[in-house]
Each structure stands twice: as C-alpha cells, then as structure tokens.
Length: 121
Image (tube, rainbow, N blue to C red; front, side, top):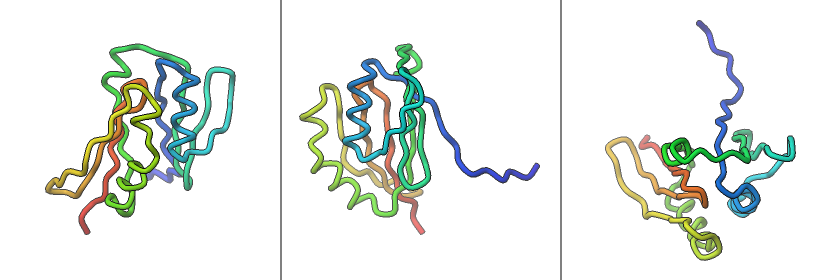
C-alpha cells in the first residue's frame, strides 16, 4: 500500500476548553474555529483538533510527539513563555537524552503530555 499522506491530525480533548484554547494560542499555534466545540490548531503545516470533550482516562493517557529542529532552543522558548505560571497544572520538564535523540516534556492544562524532540542525525 502506498501512502501519499499530507498530514496526520490527532484529536485531543480538554478539561476546560476555553482555557486550553488560550494555552495553545500562547504556545504559538494558530487557531481555526471549526465549531463551537472544536478548533484546529496548526503550525508550519502540521496540526491537531482540540475538542470540548473530557474523558479522564482518555486525557490521562494522551501523548503527542512533535519533532523540532533544535530542542535546546525550543526548551528555552517554552521556558520564556511562562506557561507554568500562567496556567494551573501546566508542567515543563527539562531535556532528557535518549539513545535516539533528546526531548523535553510539557503537560497542558488538562494533563495531555507533549513530547518535543529532536532526533540524532
């Protein structure tokens, strides 16, 4: 089977939809409102759907990996945004080195775990 994919767009939920919308805009994503309870957030040709839907077991087990070109720069930019101060429950973890590359972690206001990583060349 030959995939001629152009994008992959996960659906993620939000405990507090309006708070999460604000968080993702502050994170630098561009919001496109689709319905009163769903938006598409994108950056540089990639994106995801944010829904006004909360199922604890789903949210607690949702992880999103986003590859970045320079995880050190990205971590410094994340730190400078002050998201952990502005949003209750948001946590930013420092860069870790793995056998495949380096990554840092960010929990959004609902608890979704974002991995921002850079693969070794």
